[in-house]
Each structure stands twice: as C-alpha cells, then as structure tokens.
Image (cartoon, rainbow, N blue to C red; front, side, top):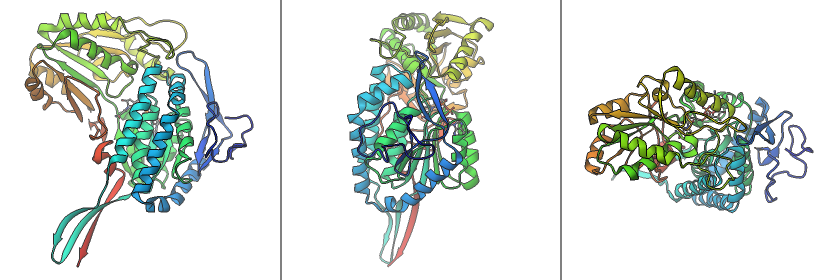
Length: 491
Ligand code: NAD
C-alpha cells in the first residue's frame, strides 16, 4: 500500500484504477470500483528468500458489509446485461491479463515461490480456462413442446457470490471462479489466501477496466475474513477451493442461509503402475507429476503403487530422474522445485520427515533437507511405508511421496480406493484395455490412463468423497453458478 493511503478510504490519486498503469508495489482492496485501504496492514514474505513482500490490507467486518452491499447493488443491471456483452467483458479482461502476463508471472515467483516458467504456465492455463468458459452458450432448454403448452428450463444468475482461493495457484483458481461467475450474470467478491494476496488484488484491480463497480471485488485479510464472508447473509454462493478440513467449515457456515456451495478440496491421488509399462519412459513422468509445484497441487501424485515384477527397476529409474531435478529460487535457470509456500505448510511437510526416523521408513532418495534461507524441501521418495502411516493416509502437499509395491490388480485397486479422498487417480500400462478396466474401478472424480493432472477446461472437474461437492469447468461448472428455473407456458 502506498504511504499516502488513507484509512478505509480510496488511495490518493487512484480512485478506481480504471485506466492507470498498474503499480506492482501497491496492493489495495477493490470495493465498489475503488481501490481502498485499511487501517491495519500485513506483510507476507518471499518463501525462497524470506524477504518481506509489499503490505496488503487487513479487511474488517465493515469492509465485508461494504463489499456485499456493492455486490448487491451492482447485481440487477449486470444480470440484465446481455450474455454477449458479458462475454465480451470477460474476454477483454483475459486479453488484459495476457498483456500483463510477465508482471503477474514475476509476482507469482516472488509471492508464491514457483519457478518462473511454471508461473508463466499458470497464466497461460488461466487464459485457456477463461476463454474456454466464454466459448460456452447457456441457452434456454425446451423440455416439452405440446400443442397447448411448452416447458422450458433456463439458467438464471444467483446474485452476489464469494470465491475463496488457496495459495498454490492463486491466479488460476481465482479466474476459474471469476470467469463463469461473471459470464452467467453474478457479481463476485474474491478472497485470496492470506499467504498470496498480492496477485489476486492486482488481478481484480485490473478487472475494474472491464466491469461496472461492484461486479468484481477483492478483499484481503487475516484468518477471520473467510468465516466473516461465509457467515454473511448477503452472498448466495460460496465457491471454495482449499483443504477438506476448511471445506467442511465453509459448508457448515453456508448452511445457515442455504448458500450454494462448490467445494474443490484436497486429494490423495494414487497412480497404479502395471508391470507392462515402459519403465524408462514412465518413471520420469510419474516423478514429475509427484514433484511439480513442489508437490503443492491437489492433483499431484501422492501414492505410487508399482507392480511387483518391475518394482526395483522402476524405483531406480525414478530415483535417477529425481536426482536431476534442480531446487532453488524461481528466477534461477533450470529450477524445477521452488520452496514450500509458507511456514505453516513447511512445518507440516517437515513433520513427515520426522516420521522417517521414528518409523524407520526406507528412503530411496532425498530424506534430508537443506538448512538456510527459504522453505526448501528435498524431493524425497519413501519405499513401502505401512499403508496406515501418515505419508500414505494424509495429503502431505510437499515433495515427499511413497512408492508402494503390489502384487495383484485387485489388491492395487482396493489399496488405491482406501481413502476418504477421491479427487484424481491414474492407471499406467502398455495395454490401454487392461488399464481402462482398472480405471473404471477407481473412486475419483478425475481418472486418467497413462497420464495424470491433464485437465481440459471443456470437461467438468470435481472430486468424489471428501474431495469436494459440485463442479468447476465444463457446462457442469457453468451451471453451478446459476439457479435452474423451470418455466411452464400454457398457450
Ligand atoms: P486452506 O483450506 O487452508 O485455505 C483455503 C482458503 O480458505 C484460504 O483463502 C483461507 O484463508 C480460507 N479459509 C481458511 N479458513 C476458512 C474458514 N473457516 N472459512 C472460510 N475460509 C477459510 O487451504 P490451503 O492450505 O490454502 O490450500 C491447500 C489445500 O487446497 C490442499 O488441501 C489442496 O489439495 C487443496 N486444493 C484443492 C484444489 C481443487 O481444485 N480440488 C485445488 C487447489 C488446492
């Protein structure tokens, strides 16, 4: 925030950020089309260097009231704006994001910690999601057409909504909510993670160029802010991405006013590697999918079941590849693993390392972490820890993964499904028919054969079991931002 910012008012010289050049060192709430400040601010750190980032607002309950009131005020005319006009506005927003891609990518490196080339990929995939969403039409459906009557179903917006975003893909996950929410005629308030607020604040500031005041807003704050927003009677929907534990709290809070919820939650994704794979080809892919974003992906591979006949060869190939992965600050050349994003998560991941000694787990590679600046964790593969151990039953959300040997396909499926989570799962085989048969038995919202984490925003995405409720992406995701309204027309 600029030193000249006034408390709970607009920043001096920037009343709505509408056409001014973005300032990458000043971060404000966006309320009712204005950049606003708060009395209290907080400062995050760069997780690779421990250097402080720029200060951000700490919103109060009054800020939430003001944002919800602005969202309610803006809703009727935005809902009345023709679909085609809303589509144009969202596309123009995507184009502007593309124009600022390098700045957002650099900010992601500084704030989130991920390597620059992966930060650029986050923006590219965000654009793909936004443009795919706007390619959809949502026409009224004719269910009955009889001589004396017609029955139609149309999709109407919900009203003011809230998007709650985690810290692992702050831009992508925010835009995955903003684009469908606004296209379908809702207004939305984004709440970033307190660990990665800057990118989302700047994103919504940029959005003010394309949407009327109150349509797209953003509030940053501390741990109180999320619960204030989910408990507020104004919003009609909470779209939440985060952990399963928090998702349950969000749903409980939303139940008081029966707000709609979409919950995209945690995963403990298994890969089942059958004995007919090309080991040298598959092992590096599996390692990549386990350690990408330093394991901080809901859909990262978190349990790798390998069939008996190839186990040793597969482990050796995976170890060799893992040893080539460079760890470091995101601007360094060739870095694959950045740091863990925040101290809380860093301590949690280190907890899994503490269990290596306590439980005498066998380490294939890694196992020891560097001292010094930054929350760095060495990519680590454990061999056959007990199925009851935390590294198998819980989501570590860091670059540590167990290899688990199995004998029969039935055994692999049973062990893969033995979890309360069901986000993604994959089967790897030289024989697609064989793999398909197993894939059909896996309990997960997204199942892949010979790949994993390969998402297509034209297709719906969501979790089974405690990995979530509802969908994002695809037509299913778009309809999740609407009430279905059935119209009976007697002629
Ligand atoms: P988190 O649940 O701690 O926080 C997510 C967001 O919720 C943050 O903005 C946080 O401030 C907010 N929040 C915290 N408590 C709240 C409450 N009581 N009410 C309302 N909001 C609250 O998750 P995280 O640590 O930021 O993210 C990691 C988790 O997210 C992992 O479990 C990961 O698997 C999951 N995730 C899921 C998906 C998916 O699409 N399924 C995608 C990315 C991450």
